[in-house]
Structures are given as structure tokens and as C-alpha cells.
Amino acid sequence: MTRVVPFEILFEQVNESAVADDTVTVAVSHYNYGRFLPECLDSMAAQTHPRLDLVVVDDASTMESSVRLAREWIESHASRFGRALLLRHRRNQGLAQARNTAFGESRSDLVFVIDADDQAYPRAIARLFEAMRDTGSAAAYTQLEFFGVEERLGSADVWRKEWFEGDNYIDATSLISKRAWQEVGGYTHIEGGWEDYDFWCKFVEKGLSAAYVPEILCRYRQHPSSMMRTETTEARNALIIEVTLRHPWLKLKP
Image (cartoon, rainbow, N blue to C red):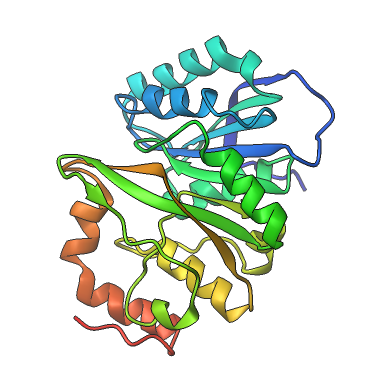
């Protein structure tokens, strides 16, 4: 039986066939964010960590200009990466599956997760890599800086199970071991959002932990169409029920 691949390869360039132990794959999920994507990818190309692969997953964008901008940027900057790959889902499958596709296609164990409208400062991946190497953690994350229509600091802090009981305080933008991603079953689609919260709760339940780098190195863009400002706010009560059914130890309040 012929296996149906749920995505098509729009561009691939391999500059380094060997994958070193310190190679990090940058996994970018993208849906109609062509106006933001170049800034995100510019921040990845500017990373001080030398060995990077790049996997951009377009989740069947309806705006062809978004796909075109993604391809143009990757074609122009492919030499920066050991491997540069642009994939496009054949149908829209949601943020969770876009991230899962990127993990599945990663050549390296270490994967840096970032959405197409976000950014990171040049030292972000290098510092996260050092934190995972020095602590043996399954993931690492930094403090977050919100920018755009709202400017403030995030709520990231040291990893503690009990702090997840009342809310999620760690963003998706982080460095994660592919082996840990496999162990927790990857990301799961949740209607309205909170895939990140669910993912970290699965980390807790598997006895995994993440290292906190107390530096402002990752940036979350706030804009009218961002999920945090729309879907998750409107559907909070339904999300509380859904996530609590998955993780009964949570103590979420409406």
C-alpha cells in the first residue's frame, strides 16, 4: 500500500550531510503570517549558536503571498543552515500538528520551537543549549518579552509541578529534546488553544523537567489576531474543562 505523505516539500537544501551532537533544528510553524515570518527567520539566522538546521512547516496557508515569502527567504538564506527545509501541509491541521511535523522531520535531537510571528535574541539558542547540556534536562526555556500591541515581561520561572496546577507559565518558544517529545506523545490539538499547556503537563506526568534560563531572550508578538488575544480568551471555560479532563491534578479557575 502506498503511504500518503500529509505534506509536500516546497524547498530543501542540505549543506551538511552529517548531523553533529550540537546541531539544533529550528522548527517554525507558519499559517498566513507572511508579514511577520521574515523577521522571525532573520532572528534565527542571527543566532550565535553555529550549527542550525531549519524546518518551516506551512499549515496550508490560504494566502499564497505567505507561502511565497517563506520560500523566498529560505532560498536566499539556505546557506546559513546545515539543512533548510520548507514543508506545506496538504490541508490545514492546526498548530499542534505543524509542530509535530517539524519534530518528525528533524534530523537532530534538539529542536527549538518558535511560531512564525515570534522572535528570539541572538544568544537565545546558545544559552538554551548550554542549560540543557549542563543540567541534563529534557527542555529549556527563557523569560519572555511581549512586544507589539502590548509590551511587558512574561511569567516564566523555575520548573515546579505545583505551579502548573493553576495556570501555564511557560511559553512554547523553547528548546526541546526530540526524544522527550516522543515520550510524551508530541503535541495534541485542543480546539481553541492551550496545546502548550497540555504539552508541559505531559512533561510533568512523565517525570520530565525543563531548565529555566532567567534571561530575556525570546519574544512573543502580541497582535489582534494572535491566539492569546482571541481564541483562548473567548473559549477559556471550555478549555479549562478540556485540559482538566486530560490532567485531573490541575486546579484551574474560570
